Image (tube, rainbow, N blue to C red; front, top):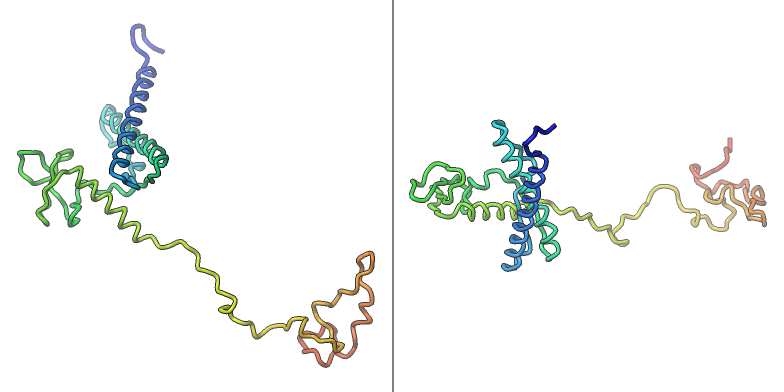
Length: 230
């Protein structure tokens, strides 16, 4: 129930969601256009799907939740827009992408302009690596780290291709087991594959089976004899 003179929060949130949708479309469009201008064939994003707002004030949690939702929308819209332009998208782990040096992999210092190049200030625009003496822009450094992670992952994934079937000349020849019925020549011996099968008449029934079951089975190996001779 809404008190008199107060605005419905549902209407406010609907307006906020509409603004976020518009922002996500605009940002995703600019990302894809930038990739096209530089002839890129792949877009790499950080995988932020498992991130959740930190505990604290409801206003702060609400802002973080909205931020993660907006980033997810940007990725979703960039994905289909890039695909329409022949560009594929993928995601990598976001762990420490803003804290690692893109050149040597060491921990960097992040600082504001005019401040000492030490410590780590979230959101600061400049970075410095004490290991390799690299100075640079924080966003550019993080982008290079993300790209290197994709390359590293592509070299670590084993091939999923199934092994090729061996050629007929490479397949092993079976030497043991029961010989095929073709080996039984027309010498009166019974083929086990023909046991129980006679000449079919018009109704499809077997005939003269007993006539072909000769008593002389001495030439057939014991394991192939179909009668009990004892």
